[in-house]
Length: 268
Image 1 (cartoon, rainbow, N blue to C red):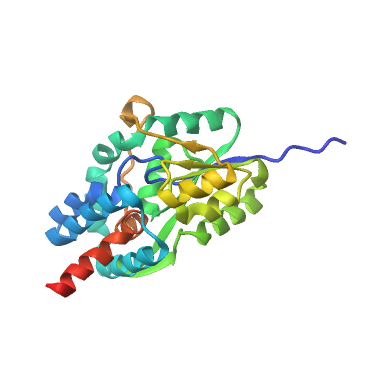
Image 2: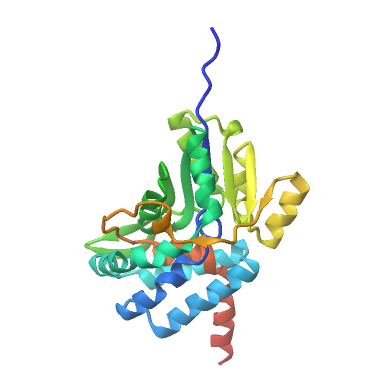
């Protein structure tokens, strides 16, 4: 009997791959207005966005930012965060999506592939975006909650090797043929994720990922056309929560900020 072809999937990083800007920066003003972060922290977020967009961040910088942001969100009230994000999500996220990414997602679905978003950002922001885009599954950072508040501890950190491990685990559960699957990311920290599939793609790559892609003959894609999501897909009417945005999103987009700001603090 002929063998039955196994299903395949397309795995997408979120920031700078699907989303044109930092989700952390996008929500920083709302978090400040809601009393969750100071003006100084908001400015750190803005500077982090600039540093990441220009050159990315290495592993050590990302780890320092993870520790800093984990401590920052400890004690935040879940309902307060829920309200802030629910009120702002559609207006903020709607114009940030790359048209090229939306087109690719549609093409993969038409080809019969599942689309999986794999992001270091928090699951509570990634999941509603995934719903908007019609993703079949989301893999994201998950934070710990006790008595209605964030503890600052991370239950699952969707970063570096952990992304590849989660992809392999999902492939085992769903029977995906990873050799026939696709992956897209902008960051060198996602090399393990890209290596886990047969068709890796570098999207708006940082300098190191661009070098690796060139050495390994991986396709390099440039996405530069943000599109109003309302014009392409139907936005859901749910009121999503956001427990790990500040931690996961800042980790993905701001590693270098902690080192630079900390140096200035110490020299002041």
